[in-house]
Image (cartoon, rainbow, N blue to C red; front, side):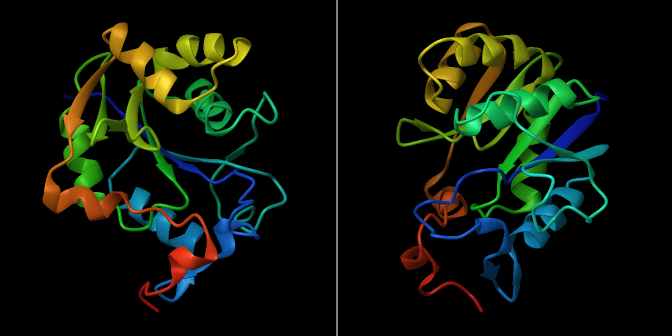
Length: 193
């Protein structure tokens, strides 16, 4: 497939369970935002965007920071803003708090995409929509969801699947560790330093 890819870091969450902005949390000797941007660069994406606040620690990193257009609506608002801002037909989303995902896994996910169709990992019945590739045209579904009551990523992915916009990719047992997320200070215990 010759389509181009926009890779996006989803870094605008409230981090209420962590107690501080996750972007600046140290993981394996570097801030999460730096680690995740390196992973995205290694995918060979044609464009990189960040969903977050313009005054955050990554503000001077050289990549555009896209703020949510709809406030207090969870990660779906960030995804919608990124889909809207993307210059390319496929948009890779990577959450700031998923540092175990590798560029190799994300590149393999990209190879599962086809024209107008993204790829969403699914683990034990749960869609991993914050480590996924959506077609840009899914922005209409995201915008509709944000106007309604269900702002969940699970609901958004279900609607994308029903519209034939995504392919669901089962996560293998050996890949499950890649989807471990850091939501609280306790999750940092035992992580590489």
